Image 1 (cartoon, rainbow, N blue to C red):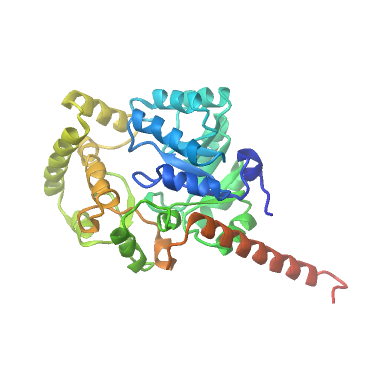
Image 2: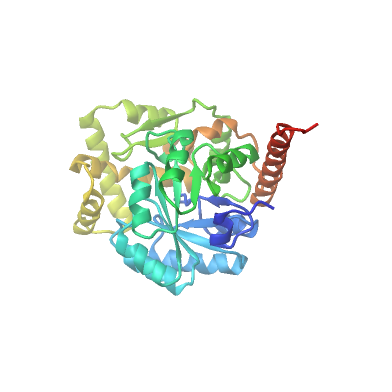
Length: 358
């Protein structure tokens, strides 16, 4: 058994975390990961508060193992969602983007373990000073919204900078990766794309086939989808979005904002307030904020409706190395077996190199 600061902190059997992926990390996938000994995390950003409450109950019905809820600190109802986490006695809360100090304190005071995702050393130092319990250091190879620092450079930087457990993310899919992350000083790994491509994932088979057919050059990072760098599978739609001019992109975004408003039931003032919340504390222009309205519509088209040609598919570069769709239990089992073997081999090499060794 591989025991780390992360397994002790979370009360889990294996140092493996499934990242909260919108429209993917629902009760089914979350409970499957947790029941297999890892930490499953519900993605609440694409759920209403009612859906989140129901999802928490569904996970509890399926497993007694620890699990978490991922939330956006910039959401207008972030405090209400944090209160739901506390009331539901969810053991872990993670933040999709920069957390707020008062939310960290509120959750920790209620006994909830808090985890923040970071893409730079300074971000890790900031949240650690605010009392975060652990950080997920996500390298540029990861899927969805990404930074620019490769995992192999980011993880050792963050490990050296903070005293809390560091979870390495961006490019992990097997036991070799877990062993490498532990060698860097991380306390575990987090995976998104690898868990998306399991039999427990709710994503349609047609969409999974597109992922499996991709290679390591089959993704691109573009700001044309929602105004900030976003790693997506390279499809005709994504390439067209990436190449379009500002005016055509703005017109498309306006249409998407209108469609999102209708689908969500929000009024225009409510949509504008959400845009202001996204823009607060960032350098996004109003045009980029409007572009962000594309994401809910296009993500749903692929991840929920099963139409890969019509939607966005966030993906890490690791998709090019994935060839099968195991269950979460099978995946975690073989990752742990391979990691233990790799570490044993490395331990043997160390012993063989000692003076007097045969």
